[in-house]
Length: 228
Image (cartoon, rainbow, N blue to C red; front, side, top):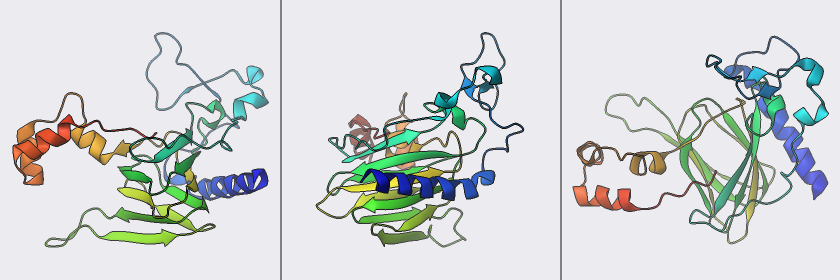
């Protein structure tokens, strides 16, 4: 099992590296291991670099993606992300990786990555996945692309588009994901729309969704779980 995890992780990272240039800019040095912003420094697009003389192999190492995430939550899924926040050696390299665990019938809800294309490899289980196109022509609806995936299948979600993954079986599922940014970001649609702080104005949402205000008030009163 450990070897299978390793092979799938390597495959995902290789796929991610092939489209890394689509998002983050190319590095201008061999590496730029991230450090916390120096005091009073100006904000930069990325992280400050550690002194190369102080860099060591541990700066490029993350352990633990062989361990399942806790799916005992309302969504029945858990995303274990490895990005520049917890693997500083990824800084300027334009890639990151994640493991997604699904309980039976677990869902990774509709969300977007504003800075990254995502490619997934199914390790275990059967998933129903899809994404929705933007900018439909006049009189048309946003087109939905869906597919049922099995172990060994690979699927790509284009950068910035709303997408989801749903475990349609009564057994757990495991996915590895590669993303074309060191810091892809994630916007979970329901959480952002109905769980923002402060809440979005009621008049805005009732008009946007064409429902009564009681429906919006109910949705805003719910606890919107974050599986990341």
